[in-house]
Length: 281
Ligand SMILES: [Zn+2]
Image 1: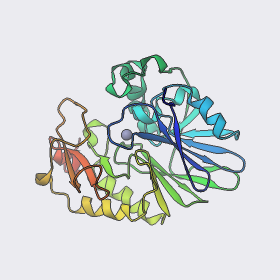
Image 2 (image 1 turned 180 degrees about the vertical axis):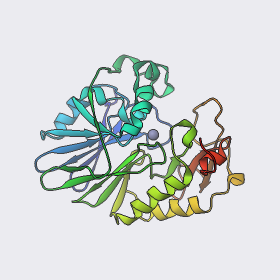
Image 3 (image 1 turned 120 degrees about the vertical axis):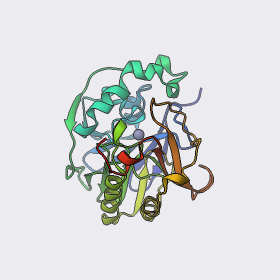
Image 4 (image 1 turned 90 degrees about the vertical axis):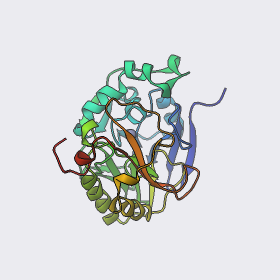
């Protein structure tokens, strides 16, 4: 049987672990462990499949701090394996809906893993911009990065200077807008400007199996600046969610996921005004 978890070891003791589940796209979903001299910090917990905590104990024996980049099904469903998890309160509601056992049992992402689903309770600690996690020889600072969800966060590591961006700055960002728990495009743009000002050395995103160049932020910014809803494409590659009332289209450059230059975002063509911040969602 294939191992449930597989880890890519980046430099500076960063472990990018491919989590079980069927997220569309070649990258699947990764949780990331950053190991310091005194403590370790884990970003995201996957779909809640199998004994991930036991797996982590083989990677580090340091006391663990657990945070979520946001509250989605493939990032926060394993939280119940840990005593406490830091998450933006703006994503509590989305996490309740996404990570419930019933929702996961219904999800196509978890087909074949039904017998390995874990569930339980844990304590949430409200995560806000400016929170600093001291790991000993390095600190990790949290910044709000709204767009993909209202409560999306990014994390800057003082040692590697890498920026961990979850689903919010990635090869293709899902921006379905304020009607279903995301933000407007101008708010997302502000988050990109903030990310750019951090002058990071590389970007580690939750669905990408390598460290992205910091210039990717400028690339996404350029695409947002040039956004033309009439040039949206459908069907959206590797995106098979059905959300009532939502018409997903992609505004992207490049051919498909295998094209390294593929970049852009998914938007909801039924709610353009709300997305552009022109009327209350
Ligand atoms: Zn997400």
